Image 1 (tube, one colour):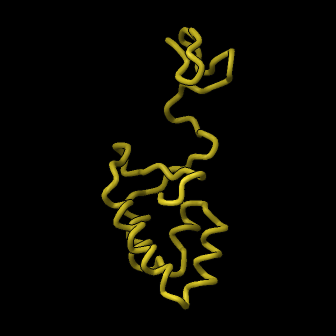
Image 2: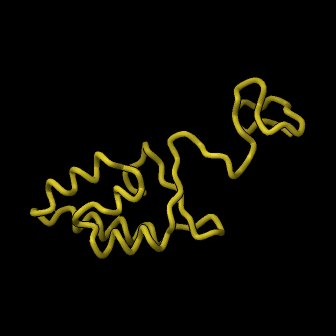
Image 3: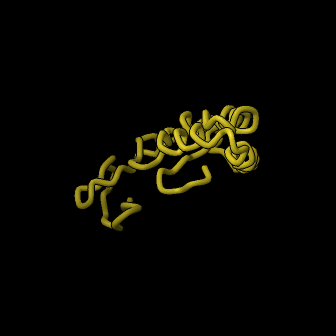
Length: 106
């Protein structure tokens, strides 16, 4: 077997001896979190104007920004869009979707 990150031959090892990348599909990856697709989508659509879905996804800073600007109505529109995007994304087979720290929309 080869490492998906650096391409080194790792045999049956769980971690690459060269770069330390994990070959375990259930291992946590830095900068990536999984959330339930249905829960995230419904929270975003129903109370997205308060940024609760951002807190649920672990994006604390943007959740605070949503709360600060909730009186403008803009976070409500963004929450609706984010909820629709989340509900239309393909899940991992267990009902979860990946949320990346470096990406704004889910």
